[in-house]
Amino acid sequence: MVANVAGIYGKPPADVVETPRDAIQFSPLMPGASELVSQAEGSLASMTILAPPGTLERRYTLALALRAVAPGGTVVALAPKDQGGTRLRKELQAFDCTIEETARRHHRIVTCKRPDRLTGIDEALAAGGPQLLPDFGLWSQPGVFSWDRIDPGSALLLQHLPALSGRGADFGCGIGVLARAVLASPKVAQLTLIDIDRRAIQSAQRNLDDPRLSFRWIDVRDPDPDLAALDFVVMNAPFHDAGTEDRGLALNFVRRAAEALRSGGVCWLTANRHLPYEGVMKPLFKRVDLKIETGGYKIYEAHK
Image (cartoon, rainbow, N blue to C red):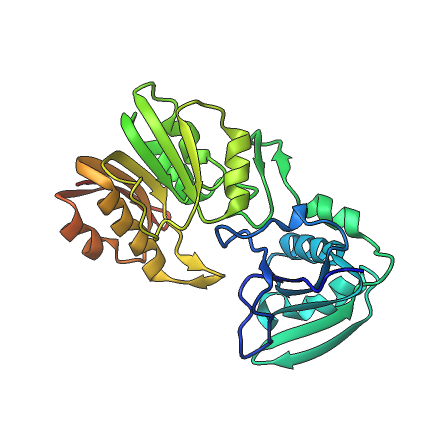
């Protein structure tokens, strides 16, 4: 008999669906959460999922949830209609689930009982799980930022990034593309890779093997006394949160970089052309140099 243990993935809106207060959190975007792929099969009584918008990531998450729930247990999946909600019915039916569907506050809500036999689980897990990208020789996973390509903002920063030295950090490190370039300098003594996405950190750990590295699965915006007196920070700051543009997110990254740097330290960053970085940066840094502006991006060198 399965204990009455509930799981939850993400933050389903409280005005759309009720979730148990003591549910185990499994979202890789919430530092400290449990890992759904490691949850024993049939060990949960129920699971509530705010389904991710990406198809491969969403089917992977649904497959993991169904595997973790005991036969006869309840799975509730929901998503905004324009972010995968309209596809939930067919995706769960493809796993041989009989479902009920409702709508509330622009979300589709699909409920099903976990069948005794699941169909198509292995294929969904393989397509959405960690994988080696042959074009880059790097490990990644659907759901990670720019998971199967080098983001153009990062590519532009790589073209202008000088050899750095001392102790530094990569804010929002992703799978380690910028970090790999930073580590090419023998004068770099230590580099901390930080990302809010556990999958990104796990990928970066597979991609980079260097004794100068440390990895942190945390939210950059949270205070951290260990991130202090750094010689440099590099970043391609995000400006989307849960699929919605959040200008404050990127600007908070800039503020945290200024707090983490020593006097005279330098921040190299990619900025999206339409965001007002200059107004935030100038009071925080002694010198802010725009190195290049092209293709929707700006590259800044800012000295504390």
